[in-house]
Amino acid sequence: MSLMKKERKAWERMKEIEKENIKEIKKKIKKWKNNELHECSVVGSQVEWGYTASMIRCFERENGSLCVVNWGYVSRVNYCPFCGYKAKKQMKLKKEGEKFDEVS
Image (cartoon, rainbow, N blue to C red; front, side, top):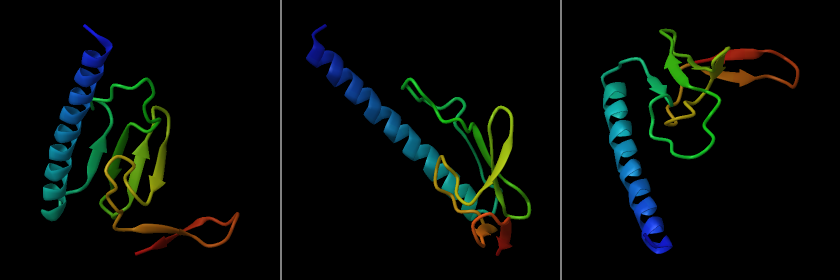
């Protein structure tokens, strides 16, 4: 197989993955509209590159805050790193060095 054919095949596979990801995002948006709690994961996704995100899962708590999970810790975030979903309860940093504050 020539290099051009391999590149074309790889490009076509990337387009297929993109279409599948768009379908998954549309399903998630439909769930959000039904007021279900948000949950995303990079585990099991079709990432074909050498490196992946250190975060493996994002979930919404019942209080409206979003958390991301690594293999060893949980961190709170304002947006889902996988799909861009915005937390209902946002964090706001007052000043440098001070703790985060709740903002509704």
